[in-house]
Image (cartoon, rainbow, N blue to C red; front, side):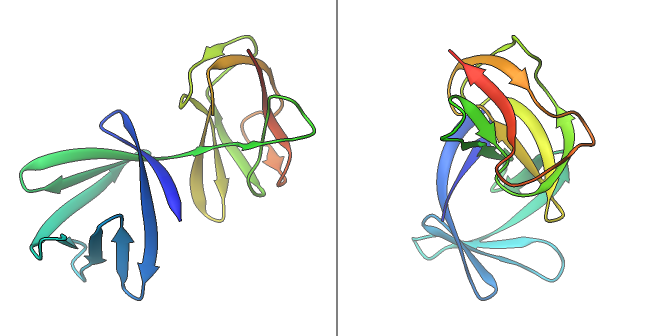
Length: 153
């Protein structure tokens, strides 16, 4: 399944799949070790150890002397019945609202954070535009398909 991440401020699409205890990340294979470190196998047959820590919504990954800041981003689903509307991808609870009515946003900008299935989901703008209406507040419960944020050009 293709996922979108922001790595050091740049949007990147990566195919992510699981094969038993291994994670397939694009052309790399990774396994979480019992001590929490991550063994990464590359296409050239080499293996490397990575260390990671989560601070807020950002994963800090240390590998080969480099540090990568990784955020998982999710665009809200487009709602065919509500032109320009962003809908909840699943039932959940609104944890944070980062935008207000009338605010101009850029594609990829964080609109809100919701909790669903015991995970935080960062809902981002799919395109540049203006927030015309924020329909929910922090603490509100939402159902799949609820229009969270309405946007126009």
